[in-house]
Length: 251
Length: 109
Image (cartoon, rainbow over all chains, first blue to last red; front, side, top):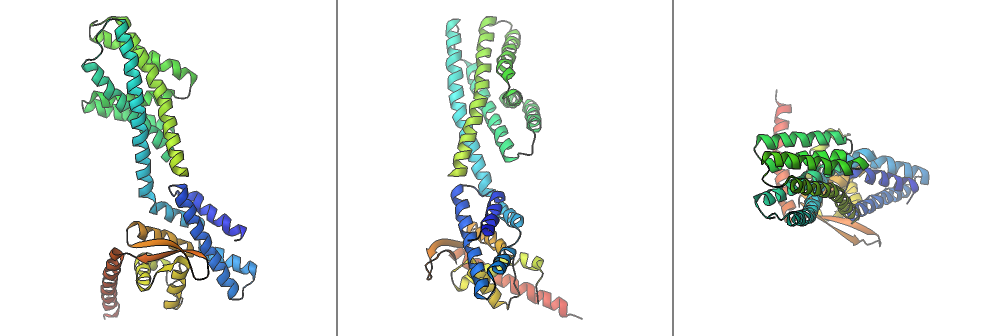
């Protein structure tokens, strides 16, 4: 097959956003075979090699338009794949983070001689799940819509937090707010310090709200640990999402 | 007479299903057959045929299998599923109804 025909098929495949490398290869093969048939047909009709190639490529159509049609055909499949990756990465990171955070906090509680498991612990699990879900969704959105700026997604997070407050769903509000905050500080060296510090301040606020039901140091230590864990979680979520997505794309 | 591709857009599914109702074919063969049967009136941009075929495959109206043809070359052959056969009959009925109605309008005084 000629170099021009290969270039044409590659141009289509590069823009078609067909999910999975296996499918892309099959589509590429089918298109190349068609071009080969066209080329042979033109040669059999008495055209020169050069003219046959020109005719086959021109008759095939605009690669951008063909890619757009393919893009539309595979839109639903791509969305399902994206949601699956989001669900898997959110679930995997949530389980790991929830377990690690609770173990660390259990250590802190034991150190201060405080009971570990209460209603607050259950609420915290929901907070972690909500944060991971929103954070993984943010990472997914950034990948699906590369033209979007991070601040637009963060703005969405803030809007979600406000909606959560309006709906009186505190864990939803917390999930959106903390995910937006962690996304904002991701990737910066300062972020590693800012998140535990901000969470420690939340610990002080909660301690004040509960009028010192437990030692201040215990609250601050527990929230600082949570802040560090949440910060680590964001890196883990981004990495798991990237790995899963790459696997699926190449698979 | 050359047909405006805009007219063809809505009827590509009908065209493909009707051709595949006669025999299983691969992409290039479908185009050749369409051109032959329509006395070259249907001149689709060849590459746009494949997204249309994949769309019909996703809808479960046609199925595709890779097979080596008589000339020893591997091809992806498309054929109708039972659902596709019913859809082809239904589309043909709709098309006849539409063309009859359109003819009545065009020929009315």
